[in-house]
Length: 100
Image 1 (cartoon, rainbow, N blue to C red):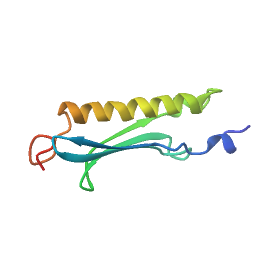
Image 2 (image 1 turned 180 degrees about the vertical axis):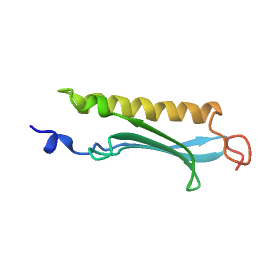
Image 3 (image 1 turned 30 degrees about the vertical axis):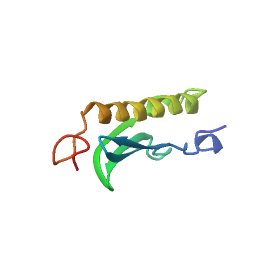
């Protein structure tokens, strides 16, 4: 199949609500698609974006099993954002995570 064929469909992402120090955070990771080949992860609290990570995956597009590799990268980036949130690396403007 060609690059523009059905194999280029956008992959579904990951969404998790995380309860931490009495507050709920949301971590979302998505595929930007063939026209924007990026893995995009956001950490939210109360609808406000606390952190964003964007990683290009153009290096994967010529691989025969690129979608499996992309899914693995998406999962790794998503879990890393959760780890950063839970370790206090992502801090709401008012102070420590969970103080809002």
